[in-house]
Length: 301
Ligand code: 13P
Image 1 (tube, rainbow, N blue to C red):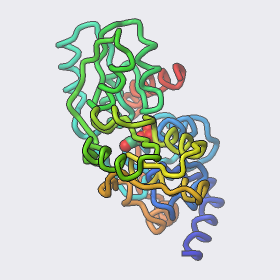
Image 2: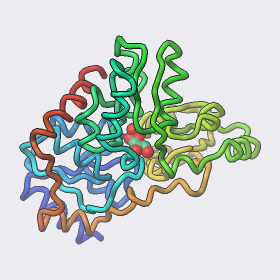
Image 3: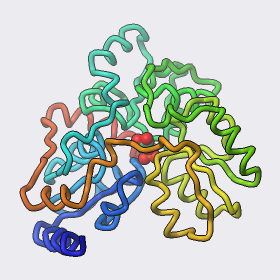
Image 4: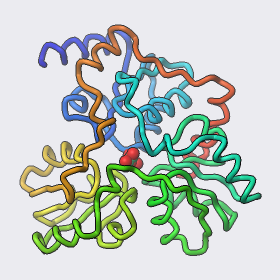
């Protein structure tokens, strides 16, 4: 492993490359990353970083977003099959029919979506800025895709808006049930419960804090609670184990492991840099349209 890390560092230097890693990535991937964070943070980095190559420790829509924002750079996704089942629930044709059914309503797409879906949307958002982005729109009725749970969370925060929702969900977050939270609360009455807004509404309602993966990490790091119960993917525990080793940090459900996020390993990062694979390209006409929705999000937030 030490040898592999050394080789990756050497290739990074030779190729003027940076490695971006999502909070859900394996610890070994985060170890070689230059930037680690949530979807919003990584998209901001991808938009402004100066380098020739971006290696994305994450899933396809993240690398695609980086390629859209930085068309002059080589963007590599070490594991080409690392996808997002939530993003795959909706197509650009679905967006066009939603627009026909709801004339005049702007479309907000969660960043967990394809370039084609982004291209049909007015503005993009992530879990950390969804409320802000939707609140910024003058229209009352807004189409929000594809995460229904995040949409319901936003709708509760913005009662003046009418959200038209798509029935997509993250299969990993959907595993958590209200009964899991009640059981953990009974077992650890002093603990704080922190969940991602992709969890079902009944879970979100029982939590002490709701936020993106980086928001959860920040809240946990500054919390006085000795026990923290986490309702998002296990990867967020990596950062907390390093920064808050004295705390007891547990998942609210043992199944909070995203199989796609766990595909990327040090070996695949090395091979991506060594053999220039797997390059993510977004055709420029499509990228230009999709870029508009992402840039608008970056401006609003
Ligand atoms: P973040 O916005 O916290 O990065 O969430 C991304 C995601 O895909 C959650 O499952």
